[in-house]
Image 1 (tube, rainbow, N blue to C red):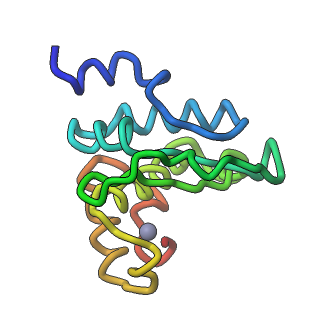
Image 2 (image 1 turned 30 degrees about the vertical axis):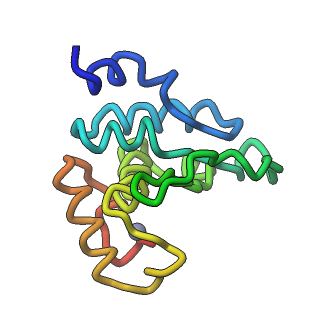
Length: 143
Ligand SMILES: [Zn+2]
């Protein structure tokens, strides 16, 4: 069995989610399950998702939650406002999550790329290629 198929079968347990919103955890799993193999592997193995807002207002985490520091194969921390679960349709939530995964997939670094419109255009294009529709594909609304 290919590694991507193994992840796909057990996606719920593969999602690294630090938060308390199980609805959002479920949507993150659904989103990752829709990704092509290469993006699925990155999202399941190299991305850590964190959210606050709906279930908790704040959270304190140990600084070593991202233990794997490897410049050639970095781990990505994806921050989400879990109130998107209340304000957006399910498909739209998936497109927002896919958008953030796409930034990681493309190697964008928010600490250095912020404000570069070409980064958003490339990200939204990839999210559309992955088959998502919604605000995660709208260059004018995203960062
Ligand atoms: Zn963006």
